[in-house]
Image (cartoon, rainbow, N blue to C red; front, side, top):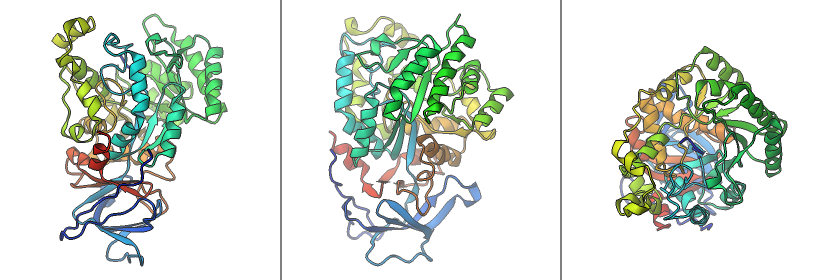
Amino acid sequence: MCGRVGLTARFLGFAFLCVVCVNAVVLAAEGAGTVAIVGATVIHPEREPAHAVAADTTIIISGNRIQSVAPAETQPIPEGATVIDARGKWIIPGLIDAHVHYFQSGNLYTRPDVVDFTERVSFAQETARNKARLPATFKVLLASGVTGTVDVGGPMWNFEVREAARRTEQAPRVAVAGPLVSMVARPELDLGDAPIVKVSTPEQARALVERELPHQPDYIKVWFIHGYGDDLVQQETIVKAAGDAAHAGGIRFAVHATELAVAKAALRSGADFLVHSVEDQLVDDEFIELARSRNVLYCPTLFVLDGYGLALSNRWQPTAAESRLADPQIVAALRDLDSMPKDEVPPGITRLMARQTLITHSRPAERNVRKVWDAGIGVVMGTDAGNIGTVHGPSVFREMRAMQEAGLTLLEVLRAATTNGARALGMEQELGTLAPGKLADLVVLDADPLETVDNLSRIHRVVKDGRVYDPDELVRSIR
């Protein structure tokens, strides 16, 4: 969350087992030509419920684009196409995690400004690990059906992450923000390329934005932390300066603002993307009107605080999806408190372990999701992955469950994670729906995702840019 407390290998091939159980079909990523996926039930999240489910559908993919989505009985199979029998499967657009941080790993050592384990693992060691492990992070995201991500703030090497993703077949699409324009400093994270930079004046805010603009960020991000005694009006002038500089450079403006008054100030300052929910109280009519006027995107990030609580109270356990799809290094490291000598446990953690209770789902953040959605504001799914206890990849399933528990239907959750997510990625003309001409990013599921949220993690195959991947093979390849 940047913070509340933020190989290319040639395609290995895949096998879709036909319902009648004969030969496996193996596709090479290059030279696959035209592919016909036949007989699946296709879910169209952008449609109203009565029209969202299309049974017995054939999808034709040519190269990296969808050529046709039509009833199997009316869709001829192109001559020479590779035919995939997908009867008994469900297909959804590729998932988009609209809030991640690649400079963070999700383990106990990734936020020394929150809890200091640096006597055990220095932040320099953790950062070096994260850079070296980037291909693995890409793979676990793709294995989890995440074909697009928005990194909303990190060091200047965030721009290298985006370039690495563009060069790597087995990677999601990546949009990025650079260092955060911040109201507060976080020196614990500064290794000479700080992800969070404190500014005190509008001039300093504009200067930081100007430093990032040559790298063509997808967003400029402000970490709008308003503490007791801070002058909100003065802070708003700083935020507006950053927003104006971003927009002058043709860049969208994202703001971390978790209190109602702060979120309103962010909207008045030109925010295009609120990267967290309003947490302190229910949103009001003024907020709704401001958000509508800005056509803002709203990303609740409901699980991330629970992730911190579970991990730091030593109660974090992997879900079935995380056991299957997460980076095994990170899953193992999240249990390090089990074996950590007492003298290596940071002060305060023992007390936290004794008293920590999960934040209940009656808090305003959850209640605001439904209210914001009903107001016609674009809600997107984002995990804040990389923070302690929120692992890259399969944390999307925890987040989508939380969104359903907050009152969204499963079809609405899917829309937030696909159609609306494509807006956050800046690719709504290319992604987010399954339609002719769109890029071929989709997920093949073994069970109906509109029956239970758990079925969203029952991933059979992932298609990104027309290339088909076996999620289990992706994860096995990083062990």
